[in-house]
Length: 177
Image (cartoon, rainbow, N blue to C red; front, side, top):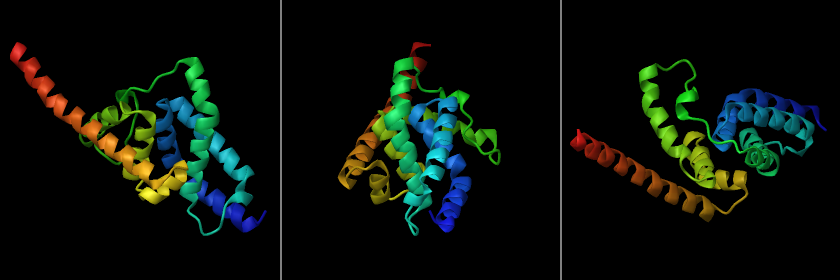
């Protein structure tokens, strides 16, 4: 193992911890499990740093590791324990630099995104929150680009319905008063 590659991975890990945690939270819906996923990702990345290809994006490689750990280990544990998604109100999604008022719409969006099926939720996160291209998201999730496109189209349709249903529900509720 090259010391240079190990240094690239170590530096990449340090720079991606917050993003990895967010991704772990999107996958698991649980703050503690997100921390466990990040810890396992760090350990695996350091153990296997010789597998990293210099010139590749460290963040994509780390997201791939985290996804693999989730699929192979944590998800099955979570299902066996019957744990659900975290409530958006319980999860702090600010970095401290934003004011609470600007976080309210983000929590509403997070709540709606959490209602998506897991594969759509993860795809939305990687493309829209992390800014990966469709190709990069496809590589990270080890699926064809067409699958990414389908998942995003389905997620947009579902989120569009939720957005349309919300005001309609409020109007119906207001009429009953």
